[in-house]
Amino acid sequence: MNPTGDINWILDELVTFPETRHAVVLSADGMMVGSSADVDRDLADTVSAIASGMQSLSKRGAAFVQSEPTPWEQTMVSFSGGFLFLLAAAEGAYLIVSAGRDVDIEALSYHMGKTIDRLGPALRVAPRHDLANPA
Image 1 (cartoon, rainbow, N blue to C red):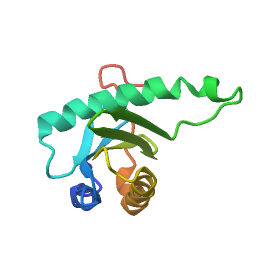
Image 2 (spheres, rainbow, N blue to C red; image 1 turned 60 degrees about the vertical axis):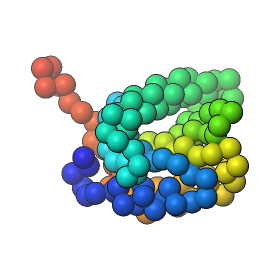
Image 3 (cartoon, rainbow, N blue to C red; image 1 turned 135 degrees about the vertical axis):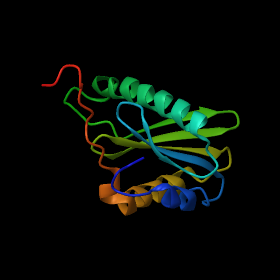
Image 4 (cartoon, rainbow, N blue to C red; image 1 turned 90 degrees about the horizontal axis):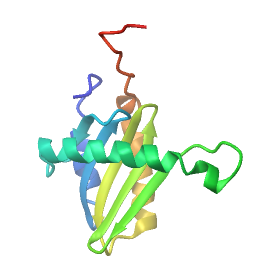
């Protein structure tokens, strides 16, 4: 868990938004930091690993958007049953949220941004150091 405090209760509030199902905060290296109550540890760990890969792949697409460097902000994946939204939450942290097909995408994106603002410093995840090869 995040040493700066329990963030799960804020994620629980986020999933009360209409059509929102689950929420997980993860570190850039794919480790779960917090999750809404409806997400068990195995699912949170799996989704965190998937989201880390999604972010990494999405970030590589920046050159297709414009020739100058542009930071990655969000990835959205659509399924027949709903959506996954992955957002940059803070330095070294991401928020992934799932929602049903009828979700108001614009309103949920705004709500996720406000949730990230509320979480503030609790989202900053320090990079992990390689204990076997300290720098």
